Image (cartoon, rainbow, N blue to C red; front, top):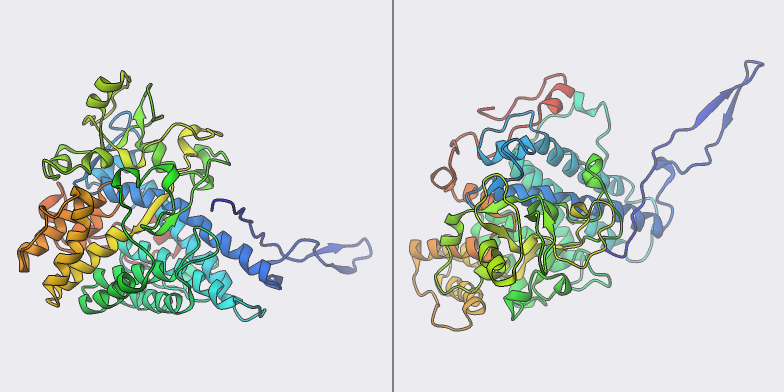
Length: 488
């Protein structure tokens, strides 16, 4: 997190020294033990920062959430550049995909760090502890939600660490039960968090409500989703940023539109040997313009390139396209910039999340970009509320209102308001989600949860690709007790 340094909790055991007399002398370790921690508020706060830290690894979830969809292509230097990304783009991924194993491992690491705090939640009392535990439970819910989205049924471990050896007894839990725990965690978080925290980047009540609404929406619980999302809309402090063109710039982070934002910094370098060690947004460098030389932007690896199809999804007079997608040929013509081309070059880049000039470039500059990820925006909240109200047959008039708030900000007038209802309104909401949130990692999962993936994504097989395969190594570590997801 920006302006917070996280600690690594060392798991050490007491050692014994064997003397020449064959006597055993117990020597107390000078290092802090994980079993003798949480003796002060600071211990809980430090462990909580460690739980936040895995959020930075979700850069991969975001990038692949676009590449797996019809919004972008894998790109890169060549068709063999990071094979796991190429395979997901082509829907030919297998249980031996390195990127899927990273998502599994990093998200479960986040769960485990949150569970470590919850395992010792009653050890030490201090003022404001409910706030700390509420943040912890939000983070556990966030990581578990990512796991369920990607893999379906996953092992559910609550209030205790998942230690080596537990895989021999733990089973995959039906996702319905995992969703129940996610809901419980988010309800607790929403009850015990304020709308405004004293430190930027900390979880708020609004973040808990928004994520809870999304979790309900993914389960088609439209009434529950509408209730919590409208409560946030009516009671929370958030609003749309007036000028959409400024929304994704580095000097407009943690804005009034940001309901939950993953914090990144360029203060600590990283390398390819440990991408999750970076304090920067790795996806930004991966998305960047290949061999770029020109104003405003920095170069990158040209992954995650938008398709012509998503460019054409914008209405002809929709000004958002210039903020969301960079037409590199037009940009080069107007600025004199030069660039190279890579695999599947389309002429477009994800302008929201490509590198800007001006950061420190510590270490590998492509791995330490400080661009925050706007994980949940107020525009997303409005569109989720509209969808819940419409698809739940609750109130199309209110659904239209929330949808049109987003469109009025986009076009700067009311002439583009949507007045349709029923299934036509549903399609309008779907279309709006695509153009408003393009490049932000939501598209693949939106298509899956609404049953449209097979008709929109090339190579998508119904009954298989709704979830990704459990990494083969994880199944082998259980003694091959776990079954693989269907089709893999």
